[in-house]
Each structure stands twice: as C-alpha cells, then as structure tokens.
Length: 500
Image (cartoon, rainbow, N blue to C red; front, side, top):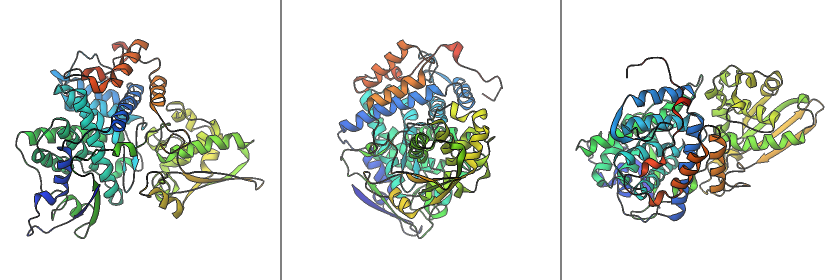
C-alpha cells in the first residue's frame, strides 16, 4: 500500500493532475490488477447479504415509494428491480435508487469503521444496475465491486467526515464512480473526472442521522448511487468536473472539512496490486447500528446470568467515543430515549437496543422495533437506567490500524438494587471476522433464508443462490439472474401520487 499525502493548495499553485487524490483513485480503478480469490468470494457473500435485507424490506414504506418512483422509468434494455418481474427493465440509475433503498432500509448489511463510517455494500446496487444495462459479465461486475470497496474503505481510513457533521455518503459517491469506471474499463482520465464530479454532488449533512431520524437515512446511499451513475455518464460524454476537488482552494477539504491547513493520509494499493480491502469489512448479525452488535451479544449473555431483571438499579456502558457520542447518551438526543421514536431513531439508540436484547435474550429485525415492544413498561424502566461513558481504552481500540486488534465493543456493569454487580466485556461482535464465530458462506446463506422465508418461493431462493455463487461465470447479458422476483400481488403499492 502507498500512503498518499493530501493537502490544500492555493489556486496560484497548479497542482499536477497525477499528484491529486482523485487521479490516484482513478489509476487503481483503471489498472489491470489480478482479482484476489478471497475478495471474489467475499463479494459473492455480500451480494447474498444485500439481497437478504433488500427482500426483507420490500414492503416497508420507504422502499415502496422508491420502487414506485423507479418503475415509472421503464427502459427496454435497462436494469432489474428487486421483487419485480425480471423481464421488466428500468433505467439503471432508477433501478439503483430502488434497490439501494431496499438494501439500506433495515440497517442490516455490511459495515466498515475507521476515521469515518461506512456501509460499503451500498456500492453494490448501482454497480449491478449499470452492469445489467451495459450487458457486462460476472467478472466485470466482480472487478468493479472489488474496486469500489477498495476506494471507500481507504477513504474511510484517511478522511474523517463526521467531525464536520458531513454524512458518510461523501465517500460513497467517489467509490461508486471508481467502481463503475473499473467495471466498464474506462480510461483513467474519465474515471478521474467522474470521481471528482461524484464527490462534488454527494456532500450532505449528518442531520439525516441525528435527532428525529427519518426515512432519508435509507434513501441517502441510494441517492449517492444514482448521482454516481450520472457523474460517470457525463464524463463518458467528455464533460469535466470541479477540479481539484480534494486539494483545491475552494475544494471539499478547504471549505467543508479540515480547511486550508488540512493534512490527510489516504492509503491506496500500488497500481496493479491486488485489491483486498473488502476483506477488512464486516456484516451484521443483527439489524442495528454496528456498534450495537457486540452489545447485543453482551446483553444475550447477561440475560442468562441475571435471575430478576426487575431488580436492576442502573446500567453503565463503557465504550468508544463513537458509540457514546453517536448512539449513546453522549449524543444528547432525547429522541433516543423516546418509546414513540421512529425505527430509524431506535436503531441508533444503544440504550433501547441493549434494554430489549437484555430482556428478550435475542434480537429480531422486525419484532424488536414494534411500537408495542418499545412501549413495554419493563423495557422502558431498564432503558431509562442506562448511561454510556467514553473510555479512552475503547476509543484507542476502535482506531487500531491492525484489523485483528480493532474492536467495537464495550464493558457493561449492571448494578442491582441490592448492590450486586454483573459485569460483561466483549471486544467485538461474535460474528465479526475476528470474533468468536465469524460469518462464512453458510451463515450468509442462512441469513438469506431466514430473511426471505415466506416472501419468495423455495424455487426462486434455490435458483438465486445457485446463480449468485456462479457469478464469476455469468456471461455478458446474464446478470439479470442476480435479481429476485416475488409474486406481483405480494408487492405493496403506494396509493399516493407523485410527479413521475
């Protein structure tokens, strides 16, 4: 890996294009690196993972609305939409919009956390949509997804967005553009312009994940996917972009991030070096913010140890800066303690999540979020007793550059009315690649079967799993096999009329 130094330059200094971060991203996107076998296998795992959570969310309101918008943009040789008959095709940017929203809605797919946050699986819907419309083959798609993961993971390692309350999709736009460019075998210059254009149009604030969190949390990555596709289309037609988008005097870094004195180091592989960043990412066993994964595992263990949960006096959770300030009491969001808050808010409240998991000894992507569940008196009592604390030890482990040492866990101390203490500590979720029982292909398939049960037919399930695991051998024009159909009568419609 090469550590690239990134800083801001005044306009009077003309920075060589080949020294710009966007160009360096474009170079690795347009190289001819051999695909790593383990990375290929992981891409297939993540396509299965995305399909699992997308199908499970097909009849949730935001996904219905996104699909309604997309099906108004039918195209003879376009892309497929999850749930819809595969013979029907739609403009790829709208298919990416619908499928991206479906994938993101349950907050249940993969994650990567470092200087910033990300769900790199958000790259997959737009790349599949473009691949289908462009009649690409399985190897092309795999190459594009591996590149997209490489770019997003390394941007997340090097540049912090949340410090400036910028939403993490600002790293997603460039990774999608790079991945599409890699998949379509575009020239370095074209990808360079597309990466800059995609970043320029995907800057938004983190209010989408603060306070009363709305359905836009699900739409935001899909919107980045749609904009990324359009950015590539423009640059393929010869159009340019704001440049240099990272290093310029009025660039994203200069005006929105650390300013004119910014200093960032972004690691990227050497040209033609195999891309393996996807292997550093991790999926979710539970439908909740990733920092909640280990805490749900802790709650399940404590459920078996504590004989009477009604005797709990207080619960203290010692954890990282991010967990405390984003999904803990350090966020100072009253909505995170409100039983009538939205699902999107509750899945960003570690207090709620821990209380439910402790009481139930389990977690369910639907049942754990119902209004009745959130308003249960015994749950509210436990919920209100929880306080989180930043522990610098956990913050340090959160930022450890060694993937084998990096952790997103916590230490929990439960004090009962009698003064007895129950203590549990866990570095990382059991399903993490370095956890007690890492997810493998069998686990991804099981997650798929559980989430799609009674939604798709057994025949369609077996067909999809067979085709996706044969992705590498799918020929040009066969990527429609990565779609999943359900009976039309089982797809809910939104009766409200929009513009389209």
